[in-house]
Length: 245
Image (cartoon, rainbow, N blue to C red):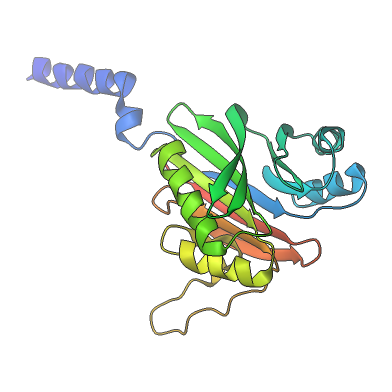
C-alpha cells in the first residue's frame, strides 16, 4: 500500500516539473494601451507627452515630418521606433515597448490609386506576436479598392498566430466610414468596443472620429476592453486591448 502511495507522489512531482504549467494554460493574457494618432502636428516634445499621458504601450502615428522628428518623439516618449515609412504624403511610424522582429513599408496598388502601409511585427513571448499596421489611403483611391488591397496584403503577409492592431487614415470621413463598413466582418472597432451590442439592446451609435479608424483582430486572439476618442483634431483614439493565450 505504501509503495503505491509513494509511486503516486513521485509521478505527481514529475508532472509538475515537466509540463504541468503548460497544461494549466501557459502564459496569461497581456494587456496594452494602444494609441492611434494621425496628422500629428507640433514639436516632438508635445507629441511625446501625449503618448506618455496616455500611458501608451504601442502607438501608430502619422505626421508630415522627417525621420529626425519621429526619432525625437520616440526618445522623449521612451518607446522603440519602427519607421518612419514614407511612400505617400505623410510619414508613418510605429512605437512600442515590445521587441520588434521586423518591419516594412510598402505602397500597394489599389485600383488606380495607392494604399501606403507601415507594418511591423513584435514579440510578446515565444508563442505570441503582435502585428501593428498603419495604413493611409491615397487621395485618389476609393475605399473599396483600398480595402481589397489591404485584405490581399493581410492574407499574404500576416501570420495566423498574430494578434493585429490596424489604424487606417482615409482622405475623408466618408471614405473612412466606407472602409469601416467593409472591414467590420474581419475586425472589431477599437473606439466602440466598450459599447458592443448586448442582447435586447439597440446597436451602439458610432462615435465620430474623422478620417481615422482603429481596428483589432482576429477576435479569437485579441479583445478590446474599452476605447475612446481622445481628440478630434488631430484624430486620436486610445484603446485598452488584451492579447489572449
